Image 1 (cartoon, rainbow, N blue to C red):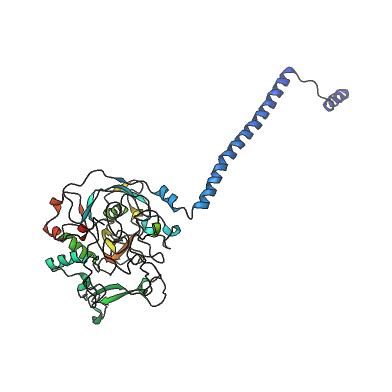
Image 2 (tube, rainbow, N blue to C red):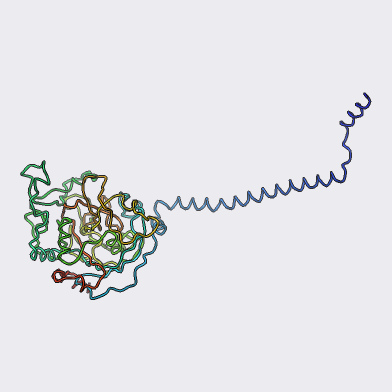
Length: 430
């Protein structure tokens, strides 16, 4: 037995015996599998490297261009405007132009990285979303002093600014403060904090549409200027008398874009193309006395139709005076739309108003900006951006224009509308 163990042990320490034929075949198969596995791993690694390299390059390019390439962002966010092809029915109402309606992208990008984009993000103008509006007629210009005077003479209407405030409206106000008036821009003698707009606005007794700068001013020579100091109900009253209505916010933006899609300005991509001014806005040190350098030709408010019309024939849809829209203002309205990924048809705005900065105030939408807009403070001359105002408040940079639904003018325009002849009848030669 011991010898057997010795033989067994010596056998285990010596060179192995020659493998059989079956063993040789098995070993070759194992080696082949190992080599194939190594080749497969190398192939996969190479593919992953190729896949990753373009992605990293694209990310690098995106990171390099993101802060300044707003135009590429606009292409990604805005889809083309699809205007209706149907023509207007009936004759053109005096002083109005046909807006064909259709589908468009509504809203605005964050303008802070754009040239002359200012320092406000305009969060209430997003998300950008698709909207459809029917065709309609729209005043080519804002309603003028001459037109509003005809309305007031025909109806005896008295605006909110011409009425003495009541004790019910202001229960805690001293009696001596219950005086008719309105808000006017009051430039400052020195630089002020721009976060507080009360620094350059003041309540002026006796200021109203007839006296836009207060009791010492009048409308002589200003017949063709936009009427101002009109509260929302004052604009509504005129529109009803004229057989018209105020535009919805969606109608206003569709019209203002003039068929363009994704442009920051109603005229295109550049704020001041060819060093030529396109709108009446503020140039200079805001809000200093004599701060507006009037490089656009006007210090303060301008007559209507002094700049080129847009693609649909509208004047002054950027700058000069703000314009009332019929929608209630909510800062979160776009985010609350029921079909953000679809198309909202003929939106009428939210059922109520909410502005987080003044949650108790009932506000309607303003659009277009004014002669006071500047990249130092407010750049809402940029199309798609939104403004707002308390419905019974007025100022010397707030006006309106009207619309009519897309039916034959003989069905909608009563005799009073023809009395409201717009000054733009003589402007087509411009």
